[in-house]
Length: 387
Image (tube, rainbow, N blue to C red; front, side, top):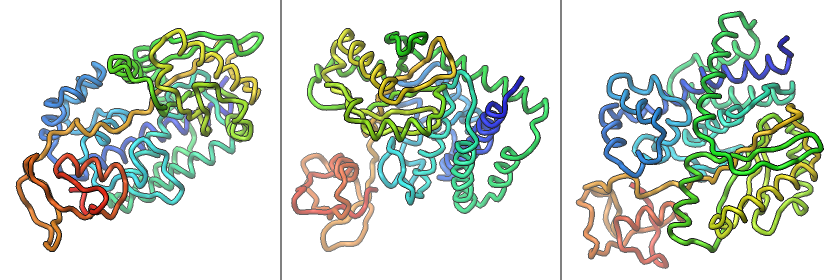
């Protein structure tokens, strides 16, 4: 028999799969770039294509004929993040960073949509509390309200409220079942088992990592990087009362970190722990597995985590991908402002040329992007146009 918690979960999943996915699609189309041009840009970028799964490659090849009709949130996010011409209204912080409460750009809401999708991506025994249900739908509706303003579409909020309150008929239940089967198949194809550890007297946790994380670790080993830290996440699907665990973990964070894994904060939904992991740890499988095992065991002990499954819990480890600024082909023309002149359109300068460019936004994102086109005196100038 379906429990009230499972019905609430079902409503949230259908809202994400239908309304939030549609918002994402319309944002992707907002630039006015022809689908054939987007497809060509993607297919001609070997670095990006090598990061995709076979199913994603097949979906991209439908762009010219069908636009974003067959695209899911995860794939659209990857494209938006790595092909900047599609989304001009970037996140207020940066791609891959949780928006603050008052951040409300298109990019911020795309981050929120992706975060909503991720909360449900790996759930094995789906059920959510009343309080979390109302919190999530409040977030959904806020995103939808801004989307209605940006996209001149007044149907999003109404459709979300229908999912929030309507009777779930057999057709909707059947659609939900198919959706769950699809997600579980995707998860089975993407994950690689890393380590299995006992976290309770009668329960084990198995840690998996996705393809991108595997590739990032391989690249780190190939370049022999050993210094510094890398931002990562541990996602715990199926944790009971995850919203309470977030507070407990943060209050006791000094007891949670290990020598090489530093806990920063957690989010509810699927319980997500944000950490900094020592890059040197990635160089050795045995050290990585041992440190992860210690960290997961501490998390369960510190917060007394309880899981729906009494036998086995799946934990997903992911390295948070930094935007790869080398993915896009350098344009033939670039907009810039030269001291004493107005904005002009000119050929991209040769590497030997030096242009004085004013910098007002002191951010690494702006600085690194401008460095691809200009020789810059960082102590003197301030950029006013990313281009």
